[in-house]
Image 1: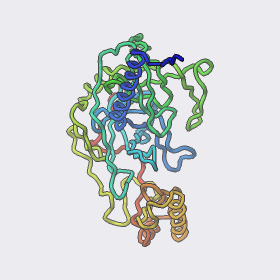
Image 2: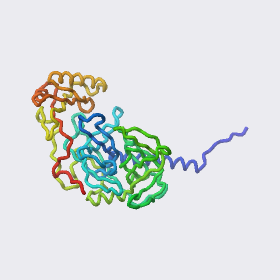
Image 3: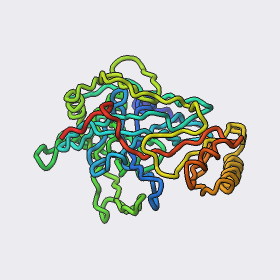
Length: 395
C-alpha cells in the first residue's frame, strides 16, 4: 500500500507567512493610530426634541489639541454645536465610552474637503474613580508621496455612526485622479468607506504612516448600496466598492499654513484639559474636579437647569448597571419631589447623579444641602465664548 502525503509547497508556506506578517503589521498600526481617532458630533441643547447628540463623522489628532476632519462633516454647524468625542480605554464591561469636548474651527480647505479643529474645554466631562481620564495620543507620521498601486491600506473611524472605532482594510487601486476646480485630487482604494468614516485616517498597513484622509461619497442606491436611516431621519446610502482618499500632502499643507507642528517624537500623555502646547497661548484656567462649595454657579447658565452629583457611597460602583440605575433613579425622584423639581436624566456610570429642573435658585441651594448630595451645579449653555483663548475662524 502506498501512502500519499500532502506537503505544502514552498509558495504556500511563503504565502501563509506573508499573510501572518501583514496581520501583525495591521494590528500594530491600529494600536498606534486608534488613540488619536475622534468622532465628530453635533450636540443640541438639552431641551431639543428627539436626538440631542448626532454623530457626523470621524477625525484624528495630528498634534496635541488639533484634529483634522472633512469640511463637509462640519459644514453648516453652529459654533456652539460642534463637539468631538474622545474614546476612553475599552474594557470588558464598557465599550465605546466617550468623553466629549468642545471644538472650534481653525481653518479649512474646501477644495480638498479638509478642516482643522482645535479642541478646547475647561473641565473634563467624565470622571472615573474621582479622577479625570488621561487622553493619550501617539505621534503620527505622514507619507506625502503617492503610494504605489496595490499598497495595503486601512481606514479607522466610526462607520454608519457606530460608537466604537472600526477598521477596514484594502489596497490602493489607483494613486491618480482628476484635479480640477470641481474634482480635487484623490487616491482610490478597493476598500469600504461608509457614512461616518468621513474624516478618519487612512494609513499604510505595513508602517502605520498616514497616507490620507477618508472622503466618503454616496454611491448609487440602486446599483451599489442600500439605504439606511440615520439619526435625524437622514437617509444615506453606503457602498461596497471604491473608496476615495484625500492625499496626506494636503493635510500637511493645511497644518504648515497654520503653524501646527506634526508630532514626531516619543509618545505623549497629557491631561484632557488640552493645554495648547504648540500655540503659545496661555492655558485656559482650569476648575477643580470637586468644587469648593456645594452649590456651583457657572457663566451663561440655562435658567432653572441643574446637575446634581451624589455621594459615591449612595450605591456601589461594582453593583450591576440596572441596580445602580434603579437606586439613583429612586434618590432622584425623592429629592425632586421634596424640592418641587422634575428629573430629566439619570447618570449611573462614571458619574452618579442626575439632571433636574427646579423652580428657582433657592430650591437648588436647598437641594445642595441634602446629605446624599455632593454638589449641585448650574447647567451652562454650550457656547464657545472663550475670549482670546481660542483661534478665530479664517475667512
